Structure formats: C-alpha cells, structure tokens
Image (cartoon, rainbow, N blue to C red; front, side, top):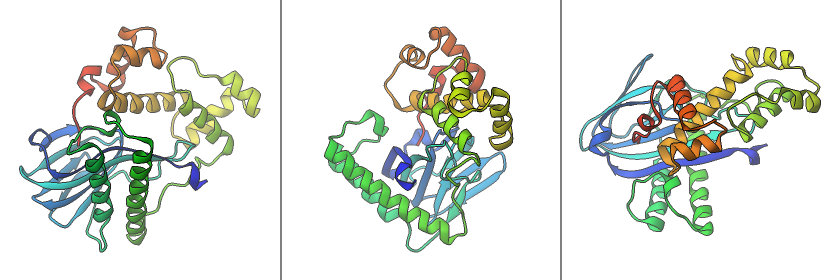
Amino acid sequence: MLGTLEITPHIAYHGKVADWACDITAIPPYTTWWEVESGRVRVTTRDGTWNAKPGDWILLPQGVQRRQLIKPGTVLTSLSFRAVWPSGCPVFIHRDPLVARTSPSPGREARLFCREIHRQNGPRKLPLQQQGFSMDGWLVLQAALFSFLGALLRQLSGLGIDMHPDSWGNARLDAVVGDLRRGLKIGPLPYAAWEEQWGVSRATLDRMAVRLLGHSLRAHRDVLLKEEMQRQLLHSSLSAKELSARYGFHDQAHFTRWIRRHTGKTPGGLKQRVL
C-alpha cells in the first residue's frame, strides 16, 4: 500500500520571499512547509493566528484559506506538495497550521531538494510543472522529496500527530472514489457501471458517501474537480479553453461559470501566484 502513495511536488525554493507574496490571501490546493531562516511570518485563518520566527518551521494545510503576512526580506525554505492515497484520502489531516521547532529539522532535506532543482534548472522560482526535467533528473528529485517527507513524518510522529489512514472506511467506497479521481470530469456520475462492478446501488453509495465523506459523491467530485482546476490554473500552461475540453465542459463559457460558482473567482482570477 505504501508504494501506491501519490506524491507530487509543486513549488520549492530557498531564499528571500518575493515582495508580492508578503501580504496575500489564498487557498493553496496543496500542503506547504516553510522554515524561517530570518525575518518573521504570520499566518491567519478563520480559526486563529500562527507566528513563526527564525528557527521555526510551519506546516500549512491544503485547501484552507489563509492570509500570510511576511516581513519584507524574510528568508525561507519553502516546499509545497500534494500527498494522497489512491482512495483520495490525504496523508496529512491537519486543518490548522502547525508551528514547531525540532531537532533535527526537516530543513536540511528540504534545502537538498531545492539545491537539486537549482543544479538542474538554475535559480528559478517557477512551479515545477512549468520546468523541464530529464528522466534521471526527475528520479533524483523524487528521491530528495521522499527524503524530506520521511524527515517531516518522523518529526510529526514525535509531536504526536497521526497521519490519515489509507481508507475512507469502506473498500467499495474507496474504489469508487479512486475511479472518480482517475476519470475526473464534469457531467453525470457512472452509477450504473459502479453498481455492475461493485454490486452497490446509487442510493447505498450516496449514503456511504454522506456518512464517511461528509457529502454526496457528486459533491465530492465537485470538490476534487475544484482542487484540480485550482492546481491547473496556478501551475500548468493549459488555457481555460484547453482545460474546459479536457474535463468535459460544454465550452469555455460553461467552464468559467462553473469555476465562478464553486470558487467565487474567474479562471483568470485563480491564476494568482502563491508561494
């Protein structure tokens, strides 16, 4: 099961925070880890405020709106990534930022990852999806990422923080959600195919989904699709027209209306930069 983990890096750098990122509000579609080398960081969500000073690291949850206030000139090591099980369960289940100071810190491994990007592509802060890598270079980069995540997980375990299990609590629901993720697109859900394959009716599947996921399968598909659109619009070079075709929307206008209804922003508005 551990070999099925889906781990995708998005952004990584070590250096001074860009001026535009010192005071922004965003809902990043990935988990972010920062270590403060100098300066100061303040992160506010609807549930509170967290401060990090030199020597601290902070873990920021995926999908939670935050306002980040970073003292100009602050130097960070930053690594943003997504880690999920095939069932769609996130590896990290925390909903609040976590500020810690541990010895050893995962910062050494994070900086090795950043240096490997610099060695391959130079000092650029572009999202990794917009950079080019050779096969051997990408595998070396993945090894560095796994080393960082191993160090981070050891520290989280020492702090008494558990990871999310690899299941939603029902094997058939896991399989259905896995199908949703692999074939993510707008439109009717394939309940008939699921019933034929798994012997579970639409009503039973939706009852399981509401009990274990907290909402219907259609609502869960919309959550997954919204997160995927945010990732694509932030980090890929695909246009709104290309995304609308890839994910089954009738046309670009339909895509734009759907994005605005689910995020409150236009596709162009979601193309903000986030570190």
